[in-house]
Image (cartoon, rainbow, N blue to C red):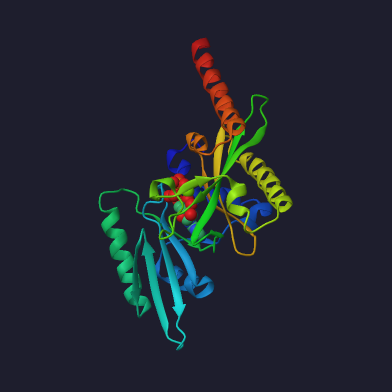
Length: 263
Ligand SMILES: Nc1ncnc2c1ncn2[C@@H]1O[C@H](COP(=O)(O)OP(=O)(O)OP(=O)(O)O)[C@@H](O)[C@H]1O
Ligand SMILES: [Mg+2]
């Protein structure tokens, strides 16, 4: 796990999770990028996401769709940021995606891209949203879900990241049009427990999970982050939540310092 390549690899982290049967239902099918696999996954899911294996902030993320028009014709489309492009054939689509990837990856060593089943995320007004769950090791050495927030995308965007114009909101606010109060509470509890179980696999002081809820209220783990940003939790007005996150973080930072001193 200390291998820095694994730490940031969506693919490697997903594989660790997938080794455990109880988490499989939450993982959207993921494959390494190839023409064959993209065609096959588009056939199966009609909507997929393509993303660089080790970037963050939503950079390089694309949504790809196979669309059947009313007249029965087949079209392909991909979107990254606000721009979207439509094609009449799969070959044209794939060539365009490959060109775009090559351009982005010119100066980078790691060219790995992954394809992931697209989740039809819940929306607030016309924009998609997902959640960031923070799980931390407590001073009592137990994993504890310490915070959760919702991230609402810009209506024109296909990613919810703050660096891509997403906005943080309390979970309750975004879920209110979709669920009763009691069900929101239950869902939150379920996510907290799931996060604490998953954290046990990674042996870190903190992990962050990107969690999507689809239109049928299924839970999906979109990404595992081993260096989650604690400061985003300052953006929602929840003093208790941010205080706990900072308190646990501070505790382990101090521990590290005093260990160094004792050496
Ligand atoms: N399979 C998917 N289905 C639906 N939406 C997705 C999917 N994959 C990614 N997204 C959207 O794109 C966003 C960015 O993707 P992801 O979290 O995997 O990568 P990242 O932003 O590069 O990583 P980081 O969170 O470390 O910045 C997600 O938060 C989500 O809004
Ligand atoms: Mg993410």
